[in-house]
Image 1: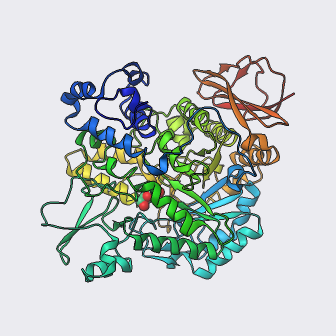
Image 2: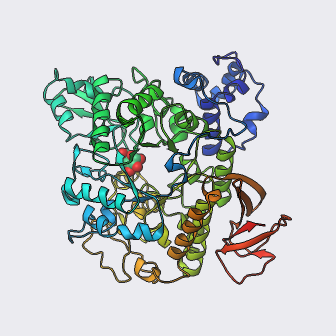
Image 3: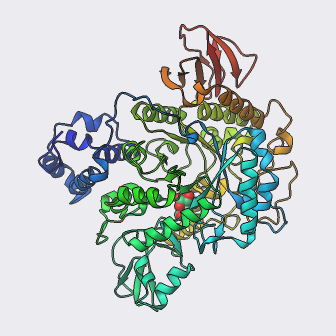
Length: 640
Ligand code: GLC
């Protein structure tokens, strides 16, 4: 490979760089172009490629790709361990590698005082739910003081608890309650942006000479012309006009979530201090919200229109892997997450838009940046977005995870199927068939098995352990999420018939995941901030707790097995069969080997002949035909 990549380089040189490879993989993923096409034409010179694609994609795309590829080879990235043979990790494994996390969305978890909003006391009262389940750590979605335009992802005060959720004392009690039970707890750190109600922003607005003015991206100008063509993730331009300041302010998300300027050392100092303050209170680390967006290309240049069309967001190439990202993360780790005794609290990065190789640059062991990254490419079958109503192909999920595992060396994979930003996976896989409780249980158990026997650190999202499905919301008034509401308004304003706009928003709405946990069969959600509508009998904690055939019991059994046999958590993985709907993999440690076989589809399939002697230990469906795998089923066996 010749470095840096120039217009005279070949496509294969671009593909040989981490970010170049990821960018190409993304194009494949979003466009549905077959994955072998870019490799087939690897010998093309980039200036020739530019001439060929320019009529379709417009000027400048190839230059943008070259810029990204070279940026990924900057100082912090140079000592990148190259993909290939997996190196054994020496020394003790960090605790989070063998852990299973459960994500709590506090607003919808448990409401102890009946005001309609879940709270910290509710979590404290239900901690046994997690110890019974058998997870190791909790991640709490935001609980800091917030006006809740984006449900806590718009922080007004990083050192206070949201009044509806309780007090700092409650949070201290929750942290202590977790630790007493042997659970670790990480909080959500939302520092790409603050709420416009944060005192920093208020000061910045009130006084152009204040230090806080430099905490944000203000641009002078006139009210009719935003400074660049970037879009907000929540519809419309990424800029708000501030008449009192006669200036624009950048917001990648809602107009009330203004982006912090991380190139300002004072901002980095503030964030490190916030982290230290919470670690002193006992939290075990943070999940860092959209943390790969913190470094923006200086000058905030216009985004490339083709990239914007492809990803749905114009400007993203200027901040999803910005020039100072690695430096800022390393500094945050050193100045915020590293404790006086030299240990480091866990840093889990939410990193939308990154590919596998970029993720590896951000989370390689010894690189001193993040510990784990969330890669979202597993969540949609290629050629689809969250807003499409389509049947998700589980083959994509296992292929993605297996490919990721084949590429990691001393880094580690974070595994998840659901979170507060995505519809329920059982519904995506089974569609209307999930209305049949038997199908719902099958698919939920299969998903649990894939997630908890794959190599990596699994993250469960509340309700997943009950087999929660998408909600039959009836209309836009049922929804609360700013993203859904803005999108619906934008589509309708753009001329889309209301019924069609609703179907699209319903397919992708984040509110499916945000409805209250069903603790009891006949729970009354009528006064909750967001109502759950699914009332299918048997899918509450009450119904499942003591039922050995329930989804909850299956999670419990799997988690217990995983805990008892480290091979299933941190052991090596080897795929030994993959065909249409079938997959089989081995998990092994020096002492034992486990076999996982799964039928990923809705039809009976002949079981693969693997020629190994194994004893069945757990199966999602029992009493079946030993030569076949039932629809959406899995068997876990131990090799003799
Ligand atoms: C992350 C959060 C999401 C939030 C956004 C802006 O993606 O998970 O809920 O809306 O960041 O903070």
